[in-house]
Amino acid sequence: MGLEDPKLQAIKNEHFGLVINVCFVADLVLGLGPHFNALTVVLFSAGLSKLTADFVGNTRAISTVLHLMIGGRGMKAFGDRLKNFLFSGVENVISTTALYAQASYYERFFPPDHYPKYSVVRMNVSLVLLNTHFSQSMPRLYLPNVIEVGGPKAKIKAKPDQLPKDIHEWLDGVGVVYFCLGSNLKSNGLPG
Image (cartoon, rainbow, N blue to C red):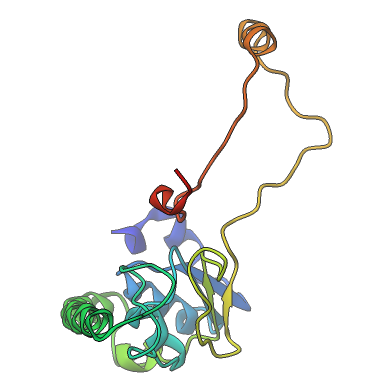
């Protein structure tokens, strides 16, 4: 388990002002915030889900905003709302099961006599950063402490490293256009 990693153990007595956790069904790491007596920020690899909405008390508008896993640009008929409701129900069951399973792990690494309860730690997140953007799906309702960051940005070097000679010659000879859709854009939404 990552919390037993020697590198983490080496800094367990340090003090920090901010702990950034990448949470994807591993919310037990939220205990690092109280451990270091620091604010907790969650970086989530997708859009707002029940698990991340619960961190900051953000409501989910199930009747008007499509579920993250359905995608699309809006609900047009009763069937769309019904499908959205069912997806959200399944997510609620998965969320409840995951939280139940993680509670024992949390208590193992963050004993209740020294740390806040798991349910309290999950509701004490200061900021949630989502790896999405409204241009990729549709606008959603967020509290001020939920921010769409749209994916990590690469730092451009002032002088990039040189390509190997054989690759450089090949690219100059044939010409290449690099086109990347990323991991959040669905190609079936592009014009054919």
